[in-house]
Length: 340
Image (tube, rainbow, N blue to C red; front, side):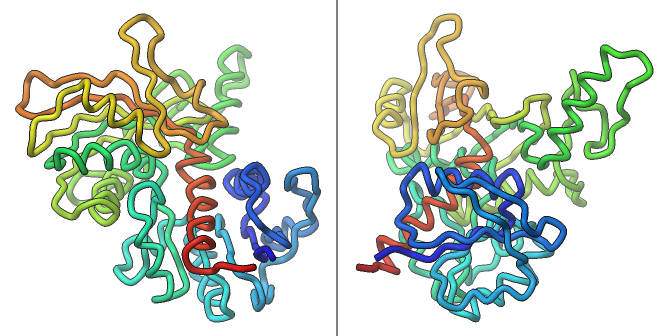
């Protein structure tokens, strides 16, 4: 006996990826329903070898459904998630709306699986920010060994993190560079993204940090350990899919780079590619379509006591969003909603 699953936002980048991953991982679903806004009603989406026609989320009755994967943004989530939860369907939400609510668990299954038990508080589980998710997967096994004090991270985030409009803008601007008179002005991003980098993701806060940078700090504390200090600089780069991060980690105890490499090789969800030769590291191109968080360039930081540097890349549409949501659904099924 399987689960009845809803994917809300099924026509978007993340929603489509959720359907792909549900099929790829053979999630035990007896029924999968694709929901979208009224303007996308009837749009066909793929689920394994099946084709689903989207239904209108407005007025949809979630009664009898077990799990709803939401990829519809904060405004729509605020409207529909409480409805689904009140009708007995557990919501796994990809937006930022519920991440900082102390009553709602923020879960990365490789890092804090026990937190999933708290779904009963409000029948909602939050999915973390894409840049946070891959970082904590890499850091948690190292934290268990040597206790992390401080993290300094610079991100190189792909345009798919800004949705289809971001991908289209990069594509159109790139083409326009080669056709006089067809240049494309920035709309989705603050400045030209083609052949450029933009040191702003989300809005600026009074501190001078952007909200994306604040999210990485706040979410790492909630998921891993509130004592960890995190400072981030988040940058949008002209890459279609795959986020990269340069991470400096300061520990309470000494951790040798070779031991760190061995620990990460055994860590769930991590793949180490770390050869000290040209090309002996992972880049976003290699991570697209993969489930793993790739870690490379692991080395001692000789300028600080008990510190390491590492390079981390992951498919942000997968581990940063859709995969993590499906993994939460698997965890929920195994621990809390067992059937059959």
